[in-house]
Image (cartoon, rainbow, N blue to C red; front, side, top):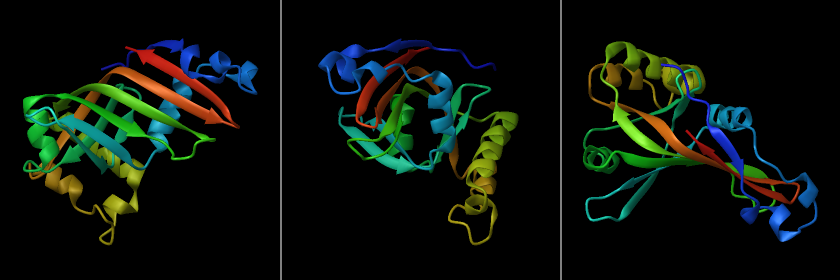
Amino acid sequence: MTAKQPRTEFDERYSSAQNQLPGAENAGATDWAEAQRQLEEAEIFQLSTVRPDGRLHITPLIAAWDASAGLLYFSTGPAEQKAKNLARDRHCALTTGGSSLTSGRDIVVEGTAEQITDPAAVEQAITRHEAKYGAHMTSPEGTFHGMGDAIRKGEVLVFAVTPHTAYAFGRENGVYSHTRYTF
């Protein structure tokens, strides 16, 4: 699978440019390559799913971006709320970023989660996670040690999110920008 390149749109309505804030001349779209770099480096994401009654369920988790396929992988136990929600409604969002008002960038990926069961695809997801999280997954002392084997045995489900839309909300040196990526 080859990753789709999104259409990138800068939205002045939610940027320094629209609000005539200092530095507005520096406000502009975040390049997709930069957004992908942040997806690759981010350690923690917030996954948002929808419960059967329509209420949101949001939980932190680890995830691994596969730029070559354009997929964001994450895992969960089959009895966890997020797995139950995704069995009913595969739409979800993964969010990462900082909590500063004046610096950093938040990335939001909205898409559809597919449970991965093909052995080669499962191995790809495990490899991405192990490469990204290193000793956290591969060392006997690691927080997530044994997760790869648990996924292989079917004790842990692995999902791939195909982005439909993504957003970058930038705050660099007090300059705000809003970028939308449409796939």
